[in-house]
Image (cartoon, rainbow, N blue to C red; front, side, top):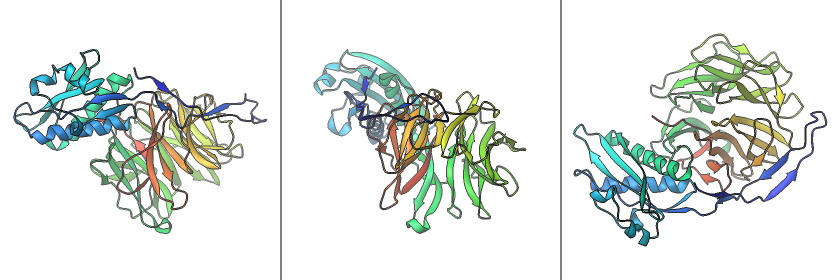
Length: 437
């Protein structure tokens, strides 16, 4: 298990809302914490088992190196900085060789091309210090999908050595932004988590915001414009077919799928009020869940589907509330200084990520009860959190103060500097997919 530390920069005891009569929360900034001692891991080029492209084994190793470095838990020694090994040594390495190279662990394997053209990658993880194997698994893919095998191998390494769930073989959907600040073109784009296989899902003819994956990763919901009004759309990723979630002319926005994918929760504005509604994902009549005066928006289900967290200004400022999935038991959970927005429940169910607005915009997490508030970022305008499927990382978008340029970042919930996610242009409103099959 990797040992982590957090560097506590500031601890602020915040005043309690008199009306709420809740105990004063303690808010902790853990920006700047990180890994106490990153693991040095060797990732040499992988040999071919049967005459496959010799360069492919090196490319796969380079992707694994990039993936492992991005976790913040490893210092990889890649194919360019270390020697190689033979095909038989993939499963039976010379541990003394890798100890001499300064590695504590080793990723080995081999590449094989089958008769039907599919690629097989054998992936092994070794404890070099103890001189013993830790894990091994084989992955198969079509020739053009070789990067997927590298991500899966990296996930095996990360999971075995960190004790956390996999998250690297995933995709990211976001709003790609181009053009000047006053005339931004916004398109929904999708890519692998390392920025590869990038493509656009919308053409930029209408403004788009808040794309969100379905639990299976095969559909998206997002807010677009139709007749100059925000409307929720559902889009099939493979075919590109899309439809309105709710027919008619009502203003709808901020959608998310339920954990089982059968329902979509969203906000609808009508009669001067904005409330949260739920509707079957395949269509039907929406059912109203909130009715308090003001704006209720940004709903997000708990992973078991029993509760919903949302933001509301019913108290006079944006704050976070939790309710039962049927709309009952509504109660406020945020009582710190400033405003709270865009909540998202962790896949583990133990935390809620949010945007805190108190002069600057920052990303934080709290317990579902509202306690244990921790601030994870310190940018000028960081907002729109989305969880990795293992519940260990939060992605968000950051807006630069002077230029208005936007970029995607990810941060470990245990602290550390946020790392920039690769995109070919500005990006906002990210959503992390579930693990791919």
